[in-house]
Image (cartoon, rainbow, N blue to C red; front, top):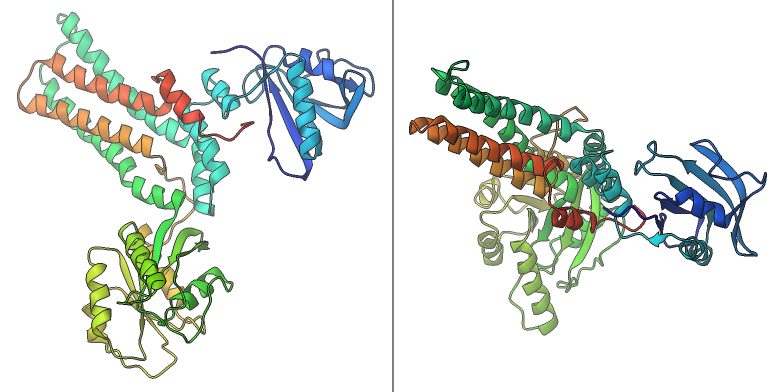
Length: 456
């Protein structure tokens, strides 16, 4: 890895009260001393670690800002390198000028994610913890944040290391027995290994079982509201969003384009799309909206099918029902405050999940939240110590490891020589190693850290 000194603006490039410029590397303190003039005249290189110093940021004889400078000496810093953070005023121009002064005095502009990459390469964090950093930044709800914080504390690392320790123990025993059969016997070992494989598969499968829930917690549920024109789709979006995001009128076909809204429902993220009413139309603009509604429908995780329960079901209602077959569907019988024309037996033909609501009055929203939790998260989600897989890369590694464990079982069934066991066990072991970064290629690390924001 590069051992040069890097620098970047670590806060958002927007006007704010405070801005932070971060410097890390062997020359961090020396470079900071070149641009910082302490009020007490003391050198940062001579200062104790984890101290804060007041003074002025200079570019030659020009004062750029009045600042506070934090000193963190290796190895007790985020990167395990000498690190300096300059707290300045949060103007875009002043932050840029300070960064320019730092670069002119010997630092190099950091790449996106390079500080966290150095923390990983220097052994302060593993790859799952590094990935959790960007997940914390991007968290959209309480559950995603809690899961990312647990991962940062090493929940995934500890679980995977425990599984790998069991694997390497068996690999070492097999190799020892093959090399030194006089002292290590493999008699009856196949049966013993089958039991161990069952336990390992169960642990890996348990982590995989959390991946779908983890994806939902991290990314949210792609939710599409569909129905005929003027059944209350836009009213539903407004009540869920808590604001008048969509135009609501008595005129059918008001919504002609796609309206998107991100909401949190009991801590669960819903990425909601309100679509144009689906019907046959000669209006060119409305037809484009209907086509887009069908496209979003194909990519959805959840369909909220809104029906005007004050009117009998029509042929169009049944046509829409055909479109959403095979999807996770909740039928919402809207306008429940009016006289009902839709019968229960009619709705049961469309979906087993249906709720009576009044989007106008906000009735039925609690039951809707209950139904979504039951459908996607198997009931209530609690802040417990469960390890949840939220990363697609981690899921793929677990899948590959599980396949390798199954191949070991197959070798035992086929009475293959014992060295076949260790080959596939080692594959399972190494794949899990890529998950936590104990066996990772440079291009994978570059791809992961390129997704980070600048200054992190």
